[in-house]
Length: 397
Image (cartoon, rainbow, N blue to C red):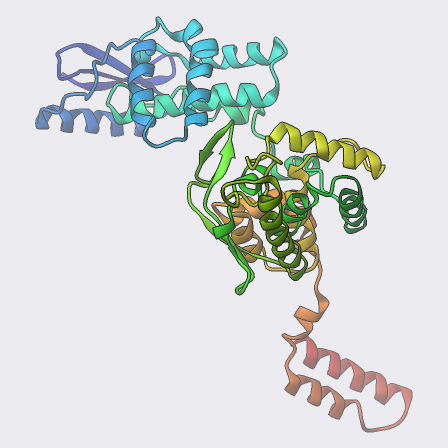
């Protein structure tokens, strides 16, 4: 008979599953325990069976889970999941039944990984993959609560928005001008690519994957529909394409580049004009490592901080746009962020914090005219002070 009982200060749900195996679920408060009890009773009445063996081992469930998520994530993400499971999660928990995973043991494992010198991002990835897999186990009826939930906050694995913003490296307008001028002089073949990243806020992989048909010079727009990731040509990081605006300077440079590319095709005897906007002398897309080396040469020649990377041009684009007063919604769409929250959390420190002209526009013209009328009559300091007080009251109201 299913029941709820108190044991050692906690509430325990005691029941038998659809296979007749006795189970226990421990809760901190009685209300949660009673909710689980009601759920188990409903399952019993409906004859509901778990979608997966309740005694499945973590390593076996991991194989099942990876086969399901494979259809919804990109190859690079699948590789990341598989490597993290193989190297970090399964050696520790693989032989343990999913329903026997304990919150304290998981917390100890994460803290130990950090203590052994793993970077915060690596530990956060370990936790995130395990938590996602256990959430799927809840859906499959193997467990009723996720023992890995909210541990990231306890262990301070998740950085706050302010901390993330401080880690972003963005050039100032003056630094960007120096960088682009130096690139045009020292790396003329890479200059159009660097200008594209800086003027359109694109990721390096998206820039390298641009094709001539993606450029609309009449509408001054660029269609971003693909990107290189670890040597693979995929959809952009968000999974969907987007259209970004092309500045006049960028349009001139890219249009001139296409004219030069046609002349180069004839000069080199290529069978046709390469489809890639930015390509090598062999007509193939640039390798990211080649671009990064060229970028570092430009940074060194321009005497700029050496911590800048090609991705910093995207950060620079976003920060300069926001500082110029552009709408965060517009910047979000240009960058291809999934939400406005992501844009603000990432670049919030560059948002203008004050706008007195905006609040002035809220003032009532009628109130202003009443203020002038009140302050316009009478003589004497006392009368003027009284009139000024009434005027302030009217405006304040």
